Length: 244
Image (cartoon, one colour):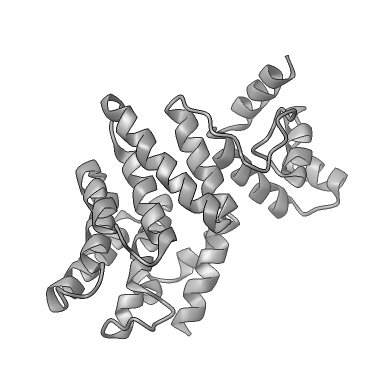
């Protein structure tokens, strides 16, 4: 039951939905609430930082800190459990927005057999480092991007490209056509962008594309993440710049 709740909550997060996360407690979703650590459990302790990301994105800082504390308790009980110390450092780096801890986590994950787990730690280290360490941040982000791209994790790779753009560095998608003004976007996302940039509401765009407003909203969330922007105004401005 709890494994299913966790999977559905992660799917919701991908689509930009929070209803399931709002209705479930962090303890319900946290793998460490089901008992001792087991390497074979489909709900891994290394999912802790992912859950913390979801909670922080939804203003649930207290729940995020609770998850980090349970990870610390697990490390105290099982100090030799493989890569658990890396996950604890990663979790606390997110909760406290501590760049040094994020770097520690990325280093401790070296050799981890789960590349996407390490990639997220590298991504967070790059995201948390201050402006005066931009060169180091870009190195972390580039390594994360390489891992995501190799694994076919396109959504994660697009998110990292957005973080790199915020640092003033552009990395194009390997599958993008160089002639395209919007190499970051899929065809369906591009269709939404064209209509929204002209001032269309979610309902108007949905009617024209024969989709639901919920789907349009999900597409926009993904577009904003990929482009490193936060609003329709920024999207419209970017559309003008790319059309010039």
